[in-house]
Image (cartoon, rainbow, N blue to C red; front, side, top):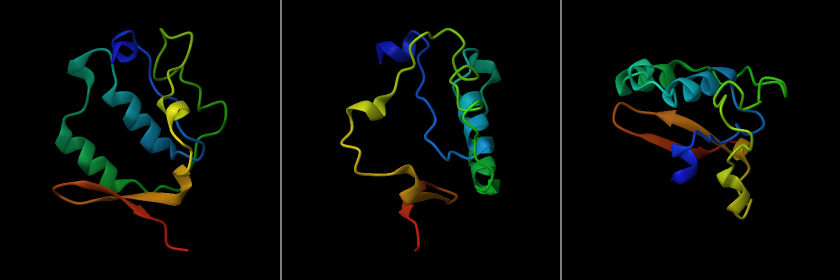
Length: 103
């Protein structure tokens, strides 16, 4: 948690939809009054089309974290078995779930 308190944010995974990245950045805004409320987050997640993806230039953490010189990446400690493209987000009125992609 100390990294988050110092302004570090995770880098988006390759293939992250741009709208999702933008929402993520808004939710981590340094100014709490500018963060969206949970109802708006859920609605926007439900409205996402998950088609446009970020380019390498847009994936820089600069938009999320202008203070950080070293991006914090919690994925570096994971075993790497789950590829971010192997799952999709399904939003319900009550909860969010990660489901396997249909092949």
